[in-house]
Amino acid sequence: KNQVEQSPQSLIILEGKNCTLQCNYTVSPFSNLRWYKQDTGRGPVSLTIMTFSENTKSNGRYTATLDADTKQSSLHITASQLSDSASYICVVRGAPSGTYKYIFGTGTRLKVLA
Amino acid sequence: DTGVSQDPRHKITKRGQNVTFRCDPISEHNRLYWYRQTLGQGPEFLTYFQNEAQLEKSRLLSDRFSAERPKGSFSTLEIQRTEQGDSAMYLCASSHHRLTEDTEAFFGQGTRLTVV
Image (cartoon, rainbow over the protein chains, first blue to last red):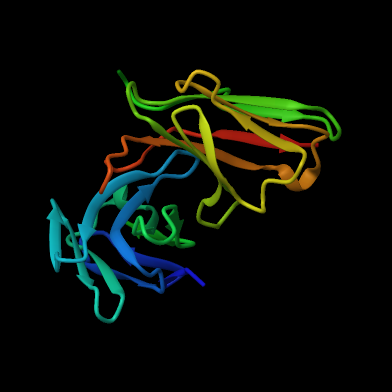
């Protein structure tokens, strides 16, 4: 079964601290993996997209890593800010030869405190 | 073009009533997706269109749900005889599909449905 699992389910950190969110997936064949940020009551917004040949990609204070062999990805947030408080969702896209849907994880809810 | 837009943003309806949501994708995006998201969960796939053709439907899409994209541009999602369990955020996304890859999916702000 094609699944995407994220951990932790929720996380509270102090402003300025770093954190790492995890994503494990079983989607196969695999096309790409994306991290989205979703503020409460709003639609998801893309942070990074990685294909199976990419190991790391950065977008400002966000750095995503991907290990296609172990089917694991992480999102590292550096020097967190209050505005980072949101849900972070890992989304895996199957290859055209398999499922072609976007498969979403349940997300990690991050709360950054002053 | 300002992105994917959904209307209405919020809808409160009485159980048993029918509701219809609209999604306007990014211009020239040929793929359009509908997702449902309940509190604390990630979005769940409902259905998607390639131009006007509905290519896949989730088993979550019961016979009370119907989606259309008549001209390959905007789409509507109708829920008939709403139930309290239909209360959720309904998200629409669009992307441009090429033969081997497509652009990232851009999401709308969603329509939050509350069935009372």
